[in-house]
Length: 139
Image (cartoon, rainbow, N blue to C red; front, side, top):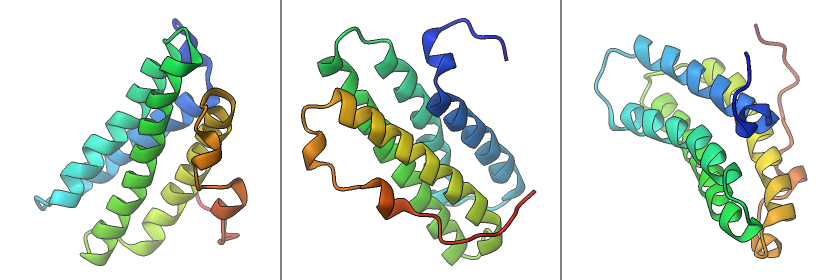
């Protein structure tokens, strides 16, 4: 992918865009209208948009709130996947790779927030907290 803007160079942005694309494919397969489906669409879209908008800010004070929102959107996506699973709209094994991608995204956002946010010491997620439990390979 050719880059035109600075945010496109960020690994976290690329991961978020890839996740957003995966969500689009997943949602197209779910024929039922469901609140969790609609919310996952919104949250997965919010994730890269807030990373891009935050990266466009000149000061760290202005950048951090957008990264916090992106982090919240990533966590919301994980919860939406849980909702879709518990409602039997998506199989558990289907969401494991997506949650692992969200773990990487949250870890990257936490690293950025620790660098840019004056409130970083109040953030509860620690890199170790998001250790991936499953050592399976996925296609």
